[in-house]
Length: 265
Length: 266
Image 1 (cartoon, one colour):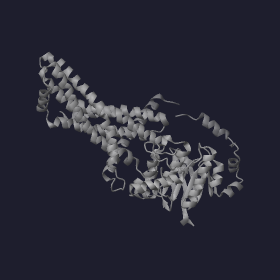
Image 2: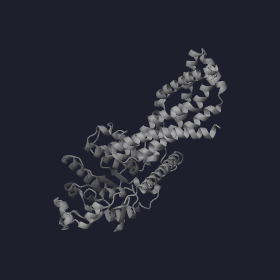
Image 3: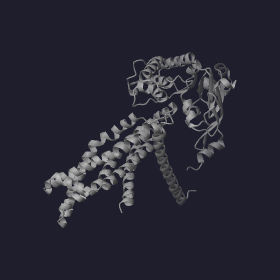
Image 4: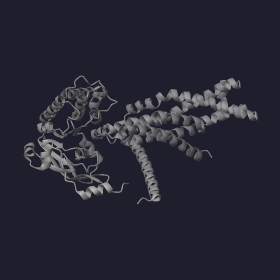
C-alpha cells in the first residue's frame, strides 16, 4: 500500500516565527494521481506547497516524496530528487534575463550532459506540448499571462519529472485559457503517468481534474478524499466552500476583547 | 506600562542583534561563494566560465569609461592642488612624488571601488532582489540550482578579476591626467613625468592599491548580493535594497580602506 505512494506527508507541523501555520497535516497521493489542494486565503495551502518543494524546514513531521523523507535528506540526495520534480509557480517565475527557450533548456543544461542540438530539440518538444511552438526566441516580458504559465509548465516538465507541482494554474486567466490548462494537466498525467499536485481555489477546475481533493482550513486538513466524497460531505465548512457561502464564525466575546486591548509591541 | 528607558535599551539590543546577524550572513555568503568556486565541480554544480566572463563584461569592461574619466579628473586635480600647495615652499618639482604615491596607494583603488559600488553594487541588489520577489530564486532552488553558486559565485570571481585590472587602468589614467597638467603648468614633458614616476614607485606601492581593490571587490559583491537576497517587501523593498547596498558599499569601502592602510602603512 505505502509502496506506491508518491507523496506521503505525516504529522506535519510548521511555524512562521511563533505563529503556527500548519497543524498536524496528513496528506497522501498515489503515483499517477492528480491531487488538488484547496482552501481559502491564509488556509496554509501555499505553505504546504512550499514545504512539499523542500523550500522550508518544518517544525516536526515527515514529508516523503517518491519514498524519500525530504526533511532528512542531505544536499546531494535532495539534488538528485529534484531532477524528478517539476514546479510551475503562480507567476511563472521565468528568468527574465533569458528567452523562453533558454528558460526551458536550463534544467537540461544543469542536470544533463546532452549536446546542444538534443537540448534544443527536447525543449522545443515540450514547448510543442504546451502549444508554444515557435515562441522560444521571445523574452518572458513579451508573453501574455496564459503564455507565461504554459512556458513555466514547459520548463517544469522538461526533465520528464515523476512529480509535478502547479501553483494556481487558473489565477488571473480567462475561462477559456484556464480550461485549456486543465486539459493539459490531464493529458500530462495520462501520457506520462505523472503525479500532479495542483494548488487552486477554483472549484470548477478542481472538480474537473482532481482524483483526490485535500481541503485545508486554518492550517488543518478538513478533508482529503475523492471528488465524489467531497460533494457528498455534510461538514458545514465544506458545504460553505462548495456553495460559496460566506462563513460566519461564532465570535468569542472574551477573546475578541482580549485581541482589541492587548498591549502592542 | 511602557518604560521609555527599557524600550530604548530593547531597541538598541535588537539593532545590535540584527547587525551581528547581518555580518554573519555576509560572512556565510562569502564562504559559500568561494566554496562553489573551488568545489562546485565535485558537487556536480560547477561555476561556469562563460557566466564569469559575462559578469566580468558587466562589472568590469563596461565600467572602463566612467572609471577612466573619473581617474583622469582626479589625477589632474591632484596636480593642481599639489602644485598650489608646494609652491608655498618653492618645491613644485616634488609634485610628481605626491601624485605617484597618492594615486597608486590611495586614489586609484578608492575611486574604482566607489564607482563599481555605485554601478554594480546597486545592479546586483536590484537583480537579485527582483528575482527574489518574482520567485525566480525559488525556481532556481527547485530546479536544483544553488542560487549562491549560480548568481553570487560568478560575480565574485568576475569582481576579483576585474577590480584589480580597473585599478591599474585607473593608476595609469590618473598619472596621465597629472602629467598633462604638469606639462602645461611646469613645462615638464610627459615622458619625463612618467620616467620620474617609475623611478619613485616601487612594486609595493602598486601592490598595496591592488590588494585593497581585491578587498573592495569582495565588499561590493557581498553587500549587493546580501541586500538582494533579503528583499521581502515587493518593489519598494527592491528600491530600498538598492539604495542600501550603494550606501553600505561605499562606507564599507572607505572604512576597510582606513583599516587596511592603518595596518600596512605605518
